[in-house]
Image (cartoon, rainbow, N blue to C red; front, side, top):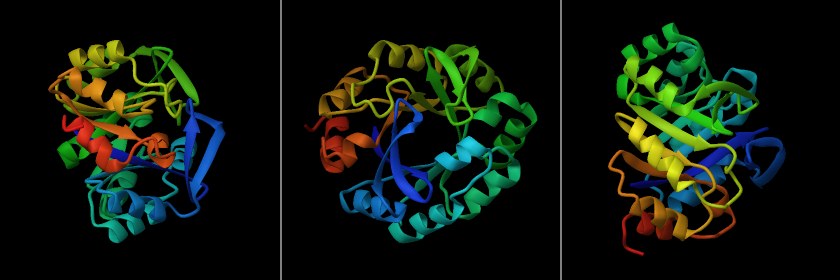
Length: 243
């Protein structure tokens, strides 16, 4: 498993939300590139970048920051937030993203999903974000009646095999994952997925590793790294079973 340090961009700054709420924001860096460089200097192999403004408004707002991060760090970057048209996906890839993360539009627009999967294949990841057991969309501001298992089934039928699963209720709270929920997701996913939500210390990373779910290929952490609960190297060692 790979540890993915998260860089969430809002208003041009690197921030973290608590429980996915836009009114519960902490600013950690005035320049997202500084955050990215700090994680790479600490040993990050891959970066997870989210354009929160784009997610909320429905169109990317941080492509320039993506381009700067890719050029300034030299490590692969996966990027999401407001990618709801084929042109937006193409622009993110041209800006240097190794993979693109789509959410809202993939669940609402089958034609869009089919187009980008056909064009970009494994470089497309679908983010399945859950609040209260139901899919939440539009930057976590809208919650549907669709459950995670149903969403995975729908997406598999369209050829998607790579996912990010985010527990929005736990995101930024540092309280750890629901291991039962992660097991359920692992049972539902045909392909592989990354987990995000609530990682607060090394024991949380060890517990995810100890689930031994072969399709859980990585863990996304943000606030815990910013607040020095553990380092990138320590987190990766925990996922590697070396700490």
